[in-house]
Length: 371
Image (cartoon, rainbow, N blue to C red; front, side, top):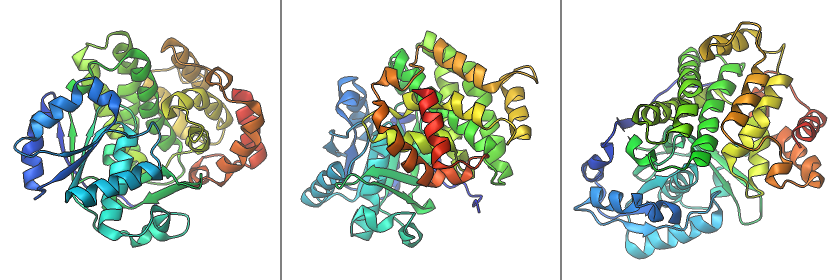
């Protein structure tokens, strides 16, 4: 059963980053740990964030991997203890934001991340976590307002903790930070944002507010993503895509579907999540035909397609237009791993909310079709 709840303080506009110092003070944080990655530092965004944080001087962790890991979490926890941190700031994409959520969780609750897995019921015991601020630097995952934390454990398993108490206390969305994002990353993150709107619209769970937000996410992303990719300096396109990503995160409580169920295990191979979604989404849309007719009609109207148009053809053509890979083979995925990926996808919690029930064999057929 979905829980209808929207809980976060969001600063949204060009220049919003300038309010960082004030937000740190408002939360009563004295020594924040700033979690980011070396790419953000190289792009000059880290320097801007550190300037905006003044008079506070955050402790820096800039080694966030492309997909968050328990090893990185343990490094952050050691830094937190050694430097006396009392709050966390995430600066980056979904990986940095998920890593920061895990830091906020374990510094307030103790134990190991595996203790809070949603599959084992551990997520139900998550209470208030350490103060956190999320600053997305790409328009994609919507993790800044998400309640889930996804991470690869030391033993290779994937852990997912989910609780509304993990949503960041303050979210700062500044489209200025996305202006320097290269076209391919703009495309890959943007496809992820679009997919959130599409898959939540098709989800069988009833959540009318989330459904309305999801459709508006699709309207914005379908129109503005190609423009943002073609002209990265277009400020309106960047504003609209950051809003689409935020809305995509807001509607996640209606749940996703098979594209994300497959992307989760594939992501453990070190592949970019949004790029995977671009490959998988057209195949899932074709697979779901006849199982979410009302939702598909709403999606066509939101995108501006003819009522008889095939959504999977539109999605495939959009991915090609954006210059993204169209097959798993183009990403270097070995066909030998597909049966195991199908097994994991069939066991993923997001498979339960795909409009068409899928077996392990169904997933294998989808993955082979995308190969």
